[in-house]
Image (tube, rainbow, N blue to C red; front, side, top):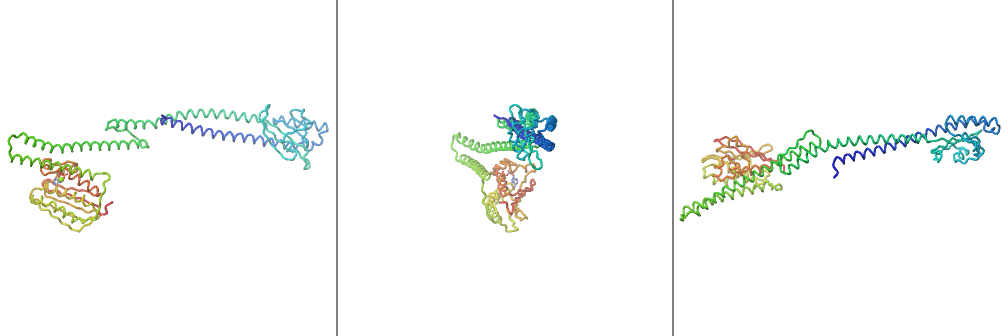
Length: 470
Ligand SMILES: Nc1ncnc2c1ncn2[C@@H]1O[C@H](COP(=O)(O)OP(=O)(O)O)[C@@H](O)[C@H]1O
Ligand SMILES: [Mg+2]
């Protein structure tokens, strides 16, 4: 496996090598072109100077005196500019050669010379086995507009190529050093980068292995630290969900266990009763029946809660007369209210029509008003009000009941939570009613407010958005 470190290091090295090759190629090419051009220009200038100097004398070369004069000039110049200088007549026959007089009086067939005697300056670069790199420059010698000969200067380029070789060596040294430095730096850098990633990874592995309380220790705010913070958040959330799930399962089991145990005891008692006693049997069977009712009530509520907590739940919003919906709900609960001699008053100020999921809102109102009836002593009063606000419709249910102590308020929406378990059991409560209310109001993007005073009463208000964000 290629670790991050190796990937980083090799990427850096590749980049450095590429840059070095490009830069040094460009540099060497430029250096070489400049150096050779400079040589060419200066040789050309020298050749022109010599050509001008010889112009008046070249015709008289057959004379001993003139010949010696020309020879002297050429040989001195040759030493001065460290080049071989050849002078030809207009046919290309060598008149003077600064290096080797053997060539004199012979035809020279160098292409630069043929161009020069035709009247053009010319230049050429060659590789000779004996001398290495050389450069030829030739210019015509003119007299009264006619070409009467040519000057050829040949010049070794070996020093230029030696210099280039030298530069290449230095660049190579530099390249090696910078590669080494880059390697070291990128190793350190890669280490700095990969350490926190390794830490993240080992924390996640630890979490996967079952330690639900891992907390990655992160600091700073670069991308990797942010990843760390996000993972910590995620772990916290997952742990929360996990805890809630465990609590829920344990609550459900407990809630279901209670009625089942009661039924079991009642049934066993009946089995072990020796004589048949109709009254006892009826009594016990009645108890068994109501325990089973409780059980099925809990299961119904649970199933309903699961249903409305589904992620892909579809709400069916309809324009609804809220007055009618509330009257209807109160009607459904009037019998149990009458039994306790509690009157339920509905005081609508407006005739309100808004978009809601009718069935769900009705279930919500049943749960709230049912609670009001359940937790209000005989002879109490309940009032239901609706009031249009600017953005919300407020529906409130006030009772003259037992109230809810301040310290219990924050828990009453928790599943299975009751302030007084025994009392709630007596009245057939499951502790799920308000969880359902909360979920339904949330689904409508609404809000809930409770005001309560012990032994005075409770006001339960829900706020539904008028232009609901559907
Ligand atoms: N109107 C109210 N007056 C007093 N207490 C209330 C009222 N409504 C709810 N409660 C308290 O909140 C608890 C949770 O309510 P809920 O979820 O509906 O469960 P339950 O099945 O017990 O009615 C109740 O057990 C009760 O203690
Ligand atoms: Mg209830």
